[in-house]
View 1: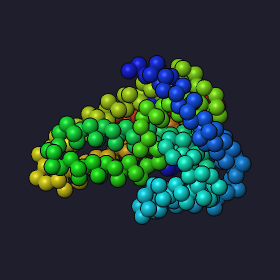
View 2 (view 1 turned 45 degrees about the vertical axis):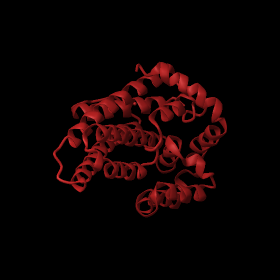
View 3 (view 1 turned 90 degrees about the vertical axis):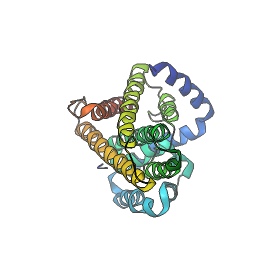
View 4 (view 1 turned 180 degrees about the vertical axis):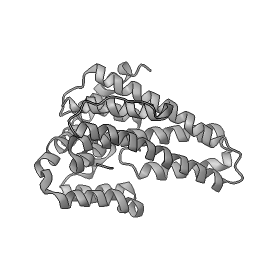
Length: 266
């Protein structure tokens, strides 16, 4: 397992559309989340290890698309079912049950938020000649995180459609809490990325190195904060935000708490 606009109204609209057009994929992914981890249970240590390997060293060599294909083959699933935020939840569930599914969703949302914030900051602050190199670094970063290349609106639409809650449409209050906390994560992430890209860089290489370091560092911090929330949930405790992490970290913690509460109501 070591390894969130007053958004409610907008999310609801997106969710209805997604639920209508993507019913087949949602149902298939929902079956995977609801049944694969439970059916395979603790007896599939080798499969869990294979998934972890695919998400680790294989993504370095093959990219996330290649890793997803390998995992889908191992599970007997269509690789399409492992794309986006739903696939992130499926893979998390396989290796960590429902807490793992929560962590998979949160990681995808965090990676997507940082990527979007970085792209916006690059466009606003870096010289035009440096932007293609910076955007390539952002693409590479997002490509290593399952679900991070999904649009955040698309991810919220999947939640709204019930794709990750066994087909049950989430309570609008729970969904709105996730949307609001995700908006806070986006806003604070933009502030962080703006600060990083406003430097006076001597070369594109310097700009890329600074940006990549910030992306990796912020994601690592965010993942640790979220992992503490899901660890508490896995131990049967109620989850809540303790704070004390700074503006970005506090927003991340609240997103993890709200996502946990939403997915726990399955």
